[in-house]
Length: 509
Ligand SMILES: Nc1ncnc2c1ncn2[C@@H]1O[C@H](COP(=O)(O)OP(=O)(O)OP(=O)(O)O)[C@@H](O)[C@H]1O
Image (cartoon, rainbow, N blue to C red; front, top):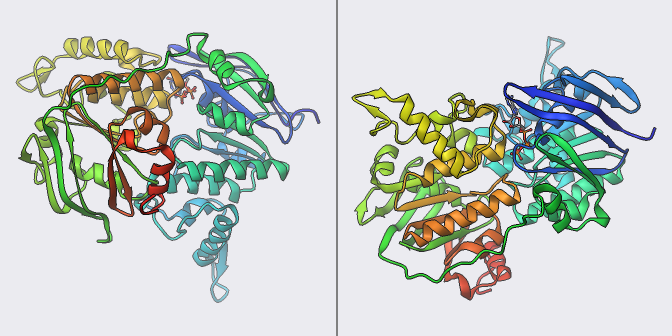
């Protein structure tokens, strides 16, 4: 058997767009095959067909040398195909263990009665599996109580639990910390050594370089190149993706900071179980300053941002915006007072997936003129404004402003949130993982936009797991560890290694 997976002449159309256009890829057994391409190039769509979520309009799928029709994820699982999705597919109010074993639950019989779900056994199995792969999770914890990176670990374990042989990872490292990424790449390598075949969608070219054997490039739905990774530099990969117009290095201007715009004083936030997750945190951000919060995922940075934005109630402390205490304001009043927020999870908190792109773009200003008057929306103005933002932020979708956001590619959803929030023209911008899932061209554009906002005198609170991003953009760095801001320094006085050490809780690094 020469190929484990063959997708031959695959075409998939959605209303208004050809997402995959006559694509042929052939993947050998035990290889790590990377798929790259700009946001919206058709990578997820192609893999969704292999996983049975869509059927191709044209073309054939061959697995282990046999032609197959994959009409559902169950059928894909039957062919030992597993997929870790870019946007998680988990039942929020189930525990990790319940999610992982869903459909293949271990059962026990009590006193010869009907079989029932053996929760203890499921949790033990998951505990063993999670230790085996170093993907730590609490099997008894509900998904709704987990942060994004823990949810991702559940997704990965779910696939490993099903003993998939063909493993599809759709941007699995986008939410992981550098340490977790190293772990995961190690796991992927081990899985390969055990005989598995891996397909990896990633925008992180360094990762592809590190572990992939071959890579294929999609461009506007078409396959444009297949290369051996060992003979291709990351720069060549980037050029294959976005043409030869690689971004020029960015220039960060020296500017004078102005007055204090955000001040956080002795802020303490508790989680649902009344445990402190942000402990007595104080800092301030001035106009023209990018204050980055560096930290390993799960150290309270998301709760800190949520508490400032009003999505979480603070237990104690003050939050001042332009000198006014907003800590008792609801979310809407905080927005009106001048706060823009790009949340960690674009799909649950950033967008209304079943609204059109235009409606999502005016989500925070539909009550203002010219978008509405006396409670009546003005579709012409909304449409005009949406088109302007779509152009400015290069938001690509099949039907422009009318596209249902649910059907947009992940990266383009992210661009929509960013465009909407920046264009509120608020003095305070809170960015949580702003470039997650974006391609290199889009990341460059967003970074430039963030610097432009800084030059325009905005106060920017940047929460990021990407040290590179922090080093490139920030003026001041606050390191958060176990809910406490352990260090606040001028960014120029710190190296990435020092920040990394503080992030791990090392004192006086
Ligand atoms: N269910 C759907 N209905 C309509 N259009 C869709 C649907 N799914 C995807 N598309 C469109 O198909 C195109 C390819 O999307 P896809 O999600 O495959 O891109 P991608 O390469 O994975 O992008 P990203 O890197 O941003 O995740 C996009 O234009 C997207 O809007």
